[in-house]
Length: 285
Ligand code: PRP
Image 1 (cartoon, protein in one colour):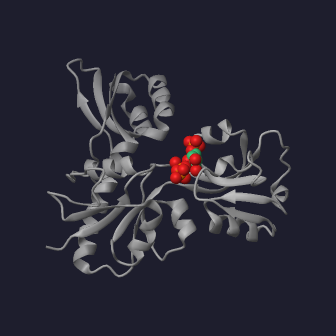
Image 2: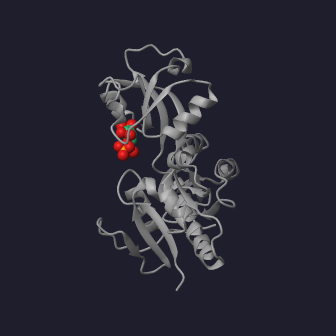
Image 3: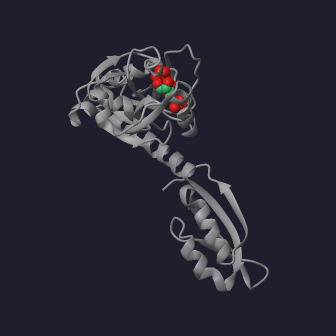
């Protein structure tokens, strides 16, 4: 039976959320952390648990058909892969950082300096694009200690909360790249595999839409229906249900997470009462 082969991180910042999104797609995966490969019971998919930095090459070479990686790694690896979906988790940025006590006067500061990084190609692109001539020290981990031990003047590293930089006496001064997890695929998938991928993408989109939206129920005077419906356009248009009290009705709709508080304030101002907000399990268009 044809299966879609997907590569995900075996450990690290993307591992848990990658598994979580597949599980929320209803894909049942048995995973011991020592396992290299797992087959889903209820969806034609094989999951390969691989080292993060190996995933782009394995996908390009056809060992896997698709992979979940950070955009930062895609940028660094320069493989010929197509981004199918941004997945909204593992958000971070690739940034330049210098010792806290140093004054920052712009990117010229990096000229003729030693910079430590685990992302030499991305750093090289940044330096070339800005006509900066700096020495790159490639190290595979703990980049943030490089300035403290005299190995480098600055670092180019991933930043998420900023805690790692802060606790090593560094400050972020310039962002090279914003990153999040993405689903990538190789070229020339056979039609049967592409069909499975299309089904997976459809499910992932339903999960992401549900994560980004909430179901809202409220009561309002009948005289306010028009005003409130304009604030809450919903997927097609809001549902309006009568209440026992003929002067009142109940309105049901969907609101986007990002506009949530702004919309709630407007609803209250327009006369809505008893507003209930409910998480959505899946949202299928
Ligand atoms: C990155 C980066 C920092 C840390 C920053 O490492 O190299 O060590 O995350 O995160 P923070 O801003 O939330 O403190 P990652 O976890 O990707 O693993 P790595 O050490 O293998 O690079």
